[in-house]
Image 1 (cartoon, rainbow, N blue to C red):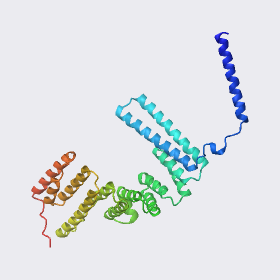
Image 2: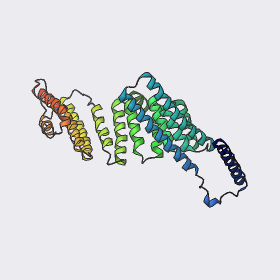
Image 3: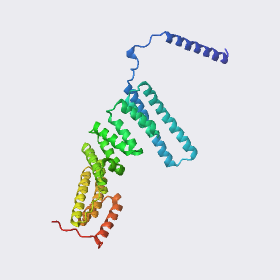
Image 4: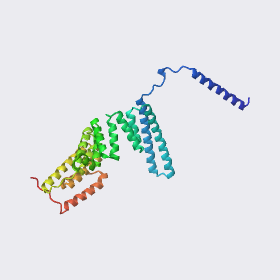
Length: 332
């Protein structure tokens, strides 16, 4: 028998076997329930989508980083944008299908809204977060996400109310207090008008929220430094009474130094610890505490801070020699 005939017969026999297998399968009994793969719950399905979302996010971040490093040409950039679009469409489709099956799932709405916001589709993101808030009005994350949107896009007063509600619903979450503080500082004028207070009171209010956040996260170095940095924003209102003004300035200096000292105790590395010393030296120079400033500068040994140290030493020397610099009045 020729090779052609053998191939033809072999193909025919394979087809017959396949047809028989289909017929047998159609009439076969389904596997017992215990042998089948268990059905996933809604939360398990959603978790799989979250993992896909995270994976795509990391992938896109890596592509963009490589693109910036390699400075890709226009054609390569277009191809990259297409890949990003395709990946995001895949995640979008997954969220859409899930919400169609589980329209009352508030967490899915929150996550989908965050994905949409990341894609620059702000109005759609807000719609999902508002739906999440409707479905779960006591879910602090929904209020917080909307607060984040209004803090960036305005009106700021909407951000104040949404952050305040998030803090009420989740009083032990430091992030919400931190974000309220940041919003107050960024939108200082709107906050002053909204709360009917002056600029100084707005900053103090922001500090209160940051202290609350620090209390809830007592080992968080970044939070402690954020609180300490707010003292750069405060100014002593001059009254014309030189002694009183000086005392008020020194009191504010002491507050700032205490905040930096608290931050320094949480420093996890020597670079962080010495970075705190830089801030303390800067404050001491501004307060005209020359000897304390000099002792603080002497403690800074970190090579990466050498430039700042030299700059502060020069500033200290210039301020000490300046004839117009008034001497500190003797305390009563």
